[in-house]
Length: 200
Ligand code: ITT
Image (cartoon, rainbow, N blue to C red):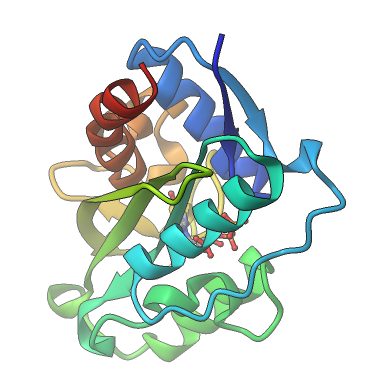
């Protein structure tokens, strides 16, 4: 069975990726980057989701000699011209402090009425092989930002994004419901045929 590295240290993402890839019928041996603790974190120096996803996937593929998939994702707010965007994980300063990031964003948008609270989650999913071959695909989930966080599922900004056509936030959806419509679900389902083509 071909081993495939999931190049992320975000536990919420690893859970989602395992479910999305298994549901899509990918029967590769999926291993999280946490299985390789000695490999240093890659600096996300790209200026697009796609560039950063490729940086992460290539770094892990080079370091392990195994094919790697990575995503770079974030929340893009219309009235902030797409911010926090690629800075979503460190919007309040500390990388991965989901609560501080969400609270800062809510404070910044406190005067913005519902009609102007449009936003989307974006995800670029990348596959990199040790020989340097690469592919990247993207997915989005459009919605509206709530004024107060609701729900306990998921991670990051899930408690404030209400997908279009839904009455609940992403954090009130079951994992299966979120994966079926999410930016990450769309991007990784599009990546599966690419993985099959390049890895067999
Ligand atoms: P890795 O780089 O190790 O994959 P990370 O958390 O740093 O983990 P990103 O750089 O891609 O990942 O940042 C993604 C951030 O965007 C994440 O921390 C959340 O704040 C937000 N985000 C992305 N997808 C999300 C989702 O499905 N639900 C809620 N927030 C999400």
